Amino acid sequence: MQTGVAYRVEVSVKDQQLRVFDGNVEHRAYIISTSKYGTGNEIDSNKTPLGYFEIKEKIGDGEKFGTIFKGRYPVGVFDFSEYSDEDLILSRILWLNGTDPENANTFDRYIYIHGTNHEDSLGQPKSCGCIRMFNEDILELYELLPIGTSIFIYD
Image 1 (tube, one colour):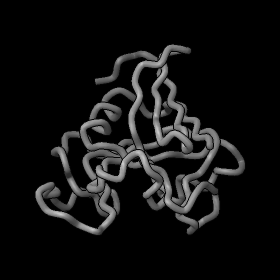
Image 2: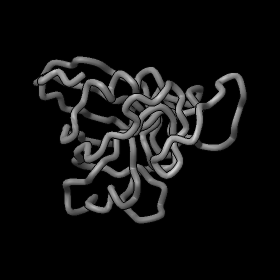
Image 3: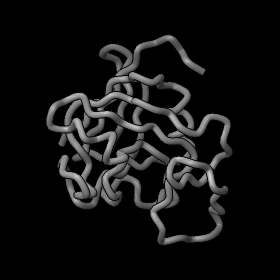
Image 4: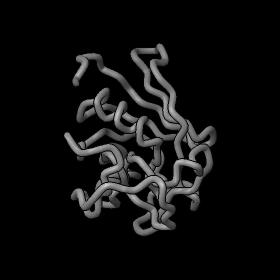
């Protein structure tokens, strides 16, 4: 459901929080997890990039809660009663494109905002570069934000 409201998003690496704004008014805040390797824009660094971005692609329309994505294709549904060490991409994907010269490689680095099977680690930097969210939260965010939404990631 697209709302017609032009939201913008800010991601604080320090606070491990993603906030959605309607103008200057905070609309919603979510607990997240950024990279355990810190921040940076280097290829193959597994770091969370900083700067300005936009949502370039949305993946997962109509898929079930907990859908597992491999190579951006649905391959099954995660069983939350089972533990997996694997860092899975679940439920929905918001694929980011860097709009600054320094982070222009972000799309090619496959940096996403996505659901995770490690919800217990949210609030701590534990990802491999992406921004992890609770699966219920990414479902909500996915419906709220259209392609082209501005995102600012900062320390």
